[in-house]
Image (cartoon, rainbow, N blue to C red):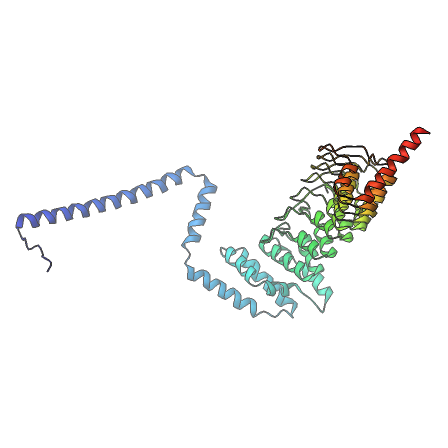
Length: 424
């Protein structure tokens, strides 16, 4: 059984009471000091702020003082009044615009803007005149309408929705007369211009490029720009629009440092490559993170048409090497791509005997792979059969090790022919 203290000594009871009173007093004093310090700080801030800051502080306190129920009542009233208006009537539309303007100009601006975002379809319907184009043009010229579109939130919402609906007339009006955040990105990091490129929508791109503040260099989370996206997906119409924009950098890259030309070559988009090669300042020999050029990438992907287009371009470096020392010809040999190899070998200035970081030439690699046709082709174009790699082995040595008899005979035939010519 628990025991309870039954000591009722008057002196002990008095001590307990005194301690409780002292504790209560300390709490009161602490609370009072806290309040006094708070008001002192407010007073000090008030005296140190200039008139503009004081006004801003007062407005902030006023807004904070509004009850939540008042804001909710305002939104309910706005919703009710807006929905009661007849959009089939011209004056009804104007009254709806005036109602929204009134909300924006009031202390309930934030609530009005949130209402915009929650009622996008209704907002779009307000601006749509499907049956009467002339009335729409007249409506767009109304002062109250243009004033509404000066609101950034409203204009941005309408622009985005018009883009999604491919509503060109509405989009043109908002972009030309409003103040939309034209470069705003979605949760994937894509701007409206990038989204239009994804959708192959050249009409939307055309409208967006007319906007004063359009950023054509904006990137998504993959480092892609509208230009590189158009190149990668062979959107020649959009590319034609972008290439004439002032400030375009045709050599801008994605996160792998690959240019639009490189991306087009990887995909084999011959028409896109042809268009890109007409752009002033394009760098044919720029390298990506691996040191690959557009020509090397085209060879790696087996894009024979892309190789053909690049070899037509003035200034192409056909002997450029990546970080592994590979040229386009070496990669064509690795891929057993006889067609690409033929095109490269027919190019004036090709160095058939370039060695990679292991010292291997195109002939040595073809020999390692047992590619009889490639070996014969390289020998036809006078490949040096005596070059040794870093393992001190020639193409013949490797063919002997691999027991590629036909290749040994092909290379030996080349040697005998050479010896005979030298003797004569």
